[in-house]
Image (cartoon, rainbow, N blue to C red; front, side, top):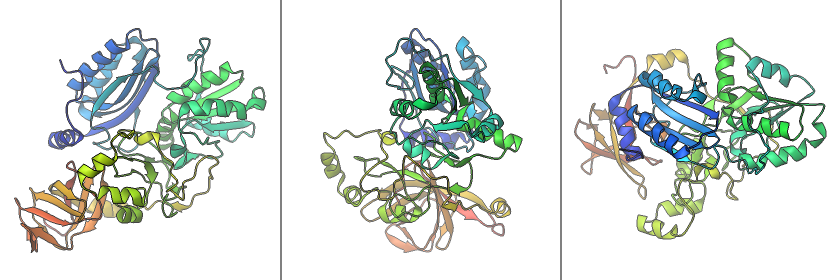
Length: 456
């Protein structure tokens, strides 16, 4: 009986490609008393693995917190696996604004002490005694009330790229840091102010609202379903967005655009930018904001030290990080002395730029066809290797390289090498190489952009 993920991210990405099915990215949570979290965890893994559901899920005695990717044609079957449990009957599933078939590439379910680490050790604290839920329009209305204080209960790297107008944005690394900070800051407003709070999907505010009621705050409100549900409602109902910028998400996408306002900067050059990335140095993996120009120059690295490290032989890199606390610490970092333009804490609502929007007619008129797949990247020489599988590729073609970590990179082919020599056109079956300023992975696909006049 399989109870744990056995495939690598690259292998899973290949299976997703071969299946050719649309996938939905979604999230949900529920606070409930779970007597045996390990047994519950194993039951979920068996049920979800059979549906090819992927994601990052935490279970504890206090409930479940899940961010997942589910095949669209298995959505109802997935919902049925939740309905088996009384506390998840009719549970709201927050479906992502932007869909990406590669948002999650593993099914990881972990048993934790709590589904949201709060740092609280108070037996009298009742998480079910929560604040009043508000829908999008109700939330907007209360934002306009001068008697309202609105608080962002997310981390600094989340609020930096997007937040509600006028929100208090604590300069914190995690949720448990924010509770005492906000409690201290708002001590004089327990009786006479509306305390309005929000987070990504609602789970942190569910606990925060109960905590602040426990602390004596009289008028406590929270955004129902968080920013994700708020966005769905404003789009369906034509409501003006009071949220500006991007909503940070904890999967490969690292963000969903809510408005076209860019309110943050590239941490390296200061240019308006709100695209998060992770440092390519395996001993770092720092989460930071990086523009396309810095990405090309710095090869996805956060510092010159990391840039130099990734060009060392692999054995030396392994030796350098021996004994260091490395691994999957992606979302626990976000600050470094090397990042000169990092902002956190008291953030501005003023947009620095507008995100580029593509012409819809032009987008519909242009399509892409799969050419081949990535096989290797030689970081020292910045050479990428691909296998041509489906369509010829020529010098001068516009290509798109796409993958869960690489994102979507569009460029024009200026030279191709086949079997070590220059070539004008590569044919199906050829193994080709050409220079690229960014690293490619085994899960990356190579597409050719086809203009309307071309015969695909």
